[in-house]
Each structure stands twice: as C-alpha cells, then as structure tokens.
Image (cartoon, rainbow, N blue to C red; front, side, top):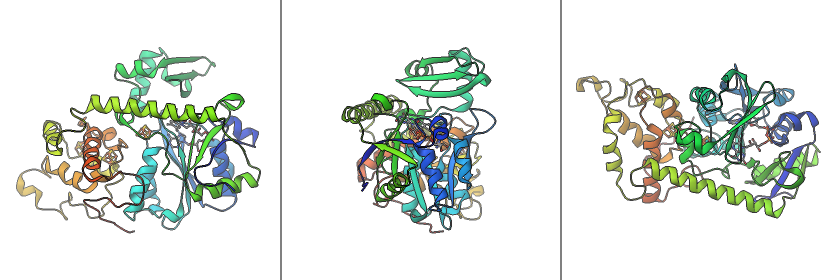
Length: 399
Ligand SMILES: Cc1cc2nc3c(=O)[nH]c(=O)nc-3n(C[C@H](O)[C@H](O)[C@H](O)COP(=O)(O)OP(=O)(O)OC[C@H]3O[C@@H](n4cnc5c(N)ncnc54)[C@H](O)[C@@H]3O)c2cc1C
Ligand code: SF4
Ligand code: SF4
Ligand code: SF4
C-alpha cells in the first residue's frame, strides 16, 4: 500500500497525455482520473489563453478536457488559493482538485486554518516550483536577450539553471537565469527570495528534479505528502492509468541537493533584498519604506489581490473603519498599509500578488515577506504548514 513519504517516478499510461504533459503527464492523468471516478466535481488548473504570456485559471468538469491544459506555464504568476476562496466559495459545497505551486499550497493552508477554505473538499496536487516570470517583462526579455519576437515563442522551460525558449520553427534558445536576473529580468522578485520549492504541505509534490536514468525527461518525481495523496495515487495505480516505479536512489539525492541549492539561492536574494535579515526590528523595516508607502494611490489593488485579505467588512472601507476623511486622506498612508499588515502579515506567503498589481511600484511583497520572517523568528510561527494557528491576529471567518 502506498503511504505518506513514499516516492515514485510516475508517468501516464495514456500515450496522448504522456506526450502532452510536461514530464510524462502523471499530473494530468491523476486529475482526469479524479474527475472520471467522481472523486472531485471539478479541477482547477491553468491554461494559456491568447498566448504563452496570458495564463488564466480554468475550471474543468469534463475529464476529456484535462489533456488540453497539460504542461507547465512559467508565466503563470496567478495564485490558485485566491481563486478558490474568492470565486469558488472556498470549496464549501464543491469537491475540487487543484494544481498548486508551493505559494498556492501554503496560502490554501493558511485559508484552511482561518476557516475560509474547506479542507475536506480540496485535493492539492503540488508542483515543485523554481519560479515564475512576470509576463509583460517576460516579453521584453525575449526581445532583448533572446532576440526573438515574443509572439513566435510556443514553449518555455527551465532546465539546468537556464530558461529555454522554443519557437514555432522548432529552434531553441537558452540564457542562464543568473544572467537574466543580474539585468533585472528573469523570475519575479518574490520568487527569487522564495525558500519553499517542494510543496510538502500539499497532498502530493510533483516535479522533474531527481528523475534520472532512462526515465529522465519522461516521468515526474512524486513525493506522497498526506494520507489523502497516498489514497488517490493508490487508486490511480490500481486502475492502471498511471505507471509508478521506485526512484533511483542517486536521483533522490540529486533532488535534495538541487532543493538545498535553491534554498541557498533564496537566502542570497533575501540578504540582497533586505538590509539586515535577522537583526533589525519590524519598526525599522517599516521606517525604511515610509517614502514608498507615500506613493500609494489608494487603488486597493493590493487588498483585492491578496489571498489573505478576505474580510467582508474591511476596516479600510468608509462604512466599517474610522472616519478616514476627517483625517484629510482616504485612508491615510501609512495607516492603510499598517492596518492591512496587522490583518494578514503573519500568514503572508510571499505569493507576490500585491506587488504584481501595485501601480505605485511599491515593493509590497518584499516588505511583507521581511516582516513575516521577523514574525517567524519572534513567535516561531511558520506560515503555510502544520495546524498551528497564526499567533497574533487570528480572525477565522467561517463562510
Ligand atoms: C511555474 C512552474 C515551475 C516549476 N518549476 C519546477 C522546478 O523548478 N523543479 C521541478 O522539479 N519541477 C518544477 N515544476 C513542475 C514540473 O514542471 C511539472 O509540472 C511536474 O513535473 C509535473 O509534470 P507532469 O507531466 O506530470 O504534469 P502535466 O501533466 O503537464 O500537468 C501539469 C499541470 O500543471 C498545471 N499548471 C501549469 N502551469 C501552472 C502554474 N503556473 N500554476 C499552477 N498550475 C499550473 C497545468 O494546468 C496542468 O494541469 C514547475 C512547474 C511550474 C508550473
Ligand atoms: S513564490 Fe515560490 S512557489 Fe510561488 S511562484 Fe514564486 S517560486 Fe514558485
Ligand atoms: S501580502 Fe502580498 S505577498 Fe503576502 S500573501 Fe498578500 S498578496 Fe501575497
Ligand atoms: S496596490 Fe499599491 S497603490 Fe494600490 S492601494 Fe495597494 S499599495 Fe496603494
């Protein structure tokens, strides 16, 4: 019987899915199987829309549609937890399987703890993640560094520290990610600092790291992370839709080494982005960014895009908070940010949504990630994992 912590090389038994999938299509096959068996009502995954840079969430109910969304989209910067919470009623009445990067999975865990998402109705199929690329800057990057028309790109992948782009005529061009990032391109700022690459808080963690030997490039490495994950993998194996093999021991070591190297790289970026990673007080962090906060247009984009900002009666609204207008501004900086910080920062998963949308170019994810790290040091609370409740401003908002 398959159990938590087991590891496998996995690939689809279906040739069409195996070819369409990024690394053997195990994820697509599992999701299709869950729909076919009625274990879930719908799958939340992502697809490219107008082009490769236009990555959108899709809710799939017909198992035959699963193959259409196979493959990894590195311009997919969206947060899946936000979509479940805001648009799918926190999975209160619908069983949903969802593909999750670590920041999506961690956010779902925080929303489950805050009673906004129904854990019983969610299956998290985790994808390892080394980073996502902002779409608009990504197009610019292709012009400048790859000397390519961005519209000619049909596929992108990350391998051996390089971003490889394939064009319509079958040619591939690659540039080391370090080189791109030294010039201010490459992965989003929050992704560079991200220290969680393998989503062990999900039910399964799937990725290409560690697949070596004859299966290299043709299978996915699956780590089973929960009894729920073990059960669905067992059922899919028994049904014959997925082929599982024991991983090569050296592959397990390689996977761990790459993960450690990525964590070190994230550490380097944290040291680069934050003035003093462990020593300074939260107050000093905030003081440093007062000029940035002053650029705030009060568009409320950060609040709308933040998966942890979910209160129906937000105190930043005229009807619910103090009389902001009497203070001459609606609502004044930095109060707007400090208020939001108090409500969400201990659960901030560095998902980057706030910074992505901010028209004032305020480095919001960088600020809140640093404050969250101080909270971790002070209270020992690690966001996005376990069952421990957030220690400061825990407002469960049961739907
Ligand atoms: C942005 C990104 C970065 C990754 N980085 C790494 C890495 O550094 N190391 C590693 O070992 N593995 C990484 N992976 C995982 C790897 O690329 C494969 O997704 C995994 O091995 C599963 O392969 P598969 O053939 O079984 O998946 P498939 O059968 O191709 O299914 C993939 C599923 O993922 C969904 N999906 C695609 N893009 C996204 C997205 N941006 N957000 C959420 N869901 C998405 C698709 O809708 C599809 O349902 C990454 C994946 C993504 C999306
Ligand atoms: S924050 Fe981390 S998990 Fe999320 S997209 Fe970036 S690298 Fe991936
Ligand atoms: S504050 Fe920003 S980075 Fe943190 S959870 Fe909210 S949107 Fe994500
Ligand atoms: S997104 Fe930026 S400009 Fe808009 S309210 Fe938030 S901090 Fe202010």
